[in-house]
Length: 63
Image 1: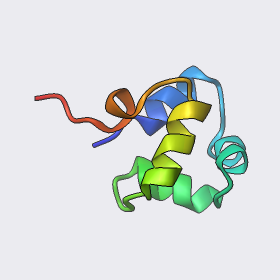
Image 2 (image 1 turned 180 degrees about the vertical axis):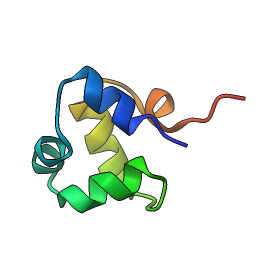
Image 3 (image 1 turned 30 degrees about the horizontal axis):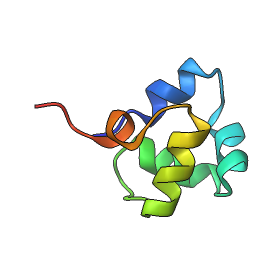
Image 4 (image 1 turned 60 degrees about the vertical axis):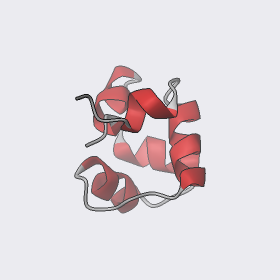
């Protein structure tokens, strides 16, 4: 579970726009949002910075 799509929508970014900002293919963003790909720590950090949040908020599952 992650909140990439939620935070991306808050920033009014398309998957393509986000992918360009973090240096991956649009399909990678789609896979991450659909929990079909586990990004590297480096990519997680880039996503969090780009989306204006921290790793815990973006990727940590609530209990």
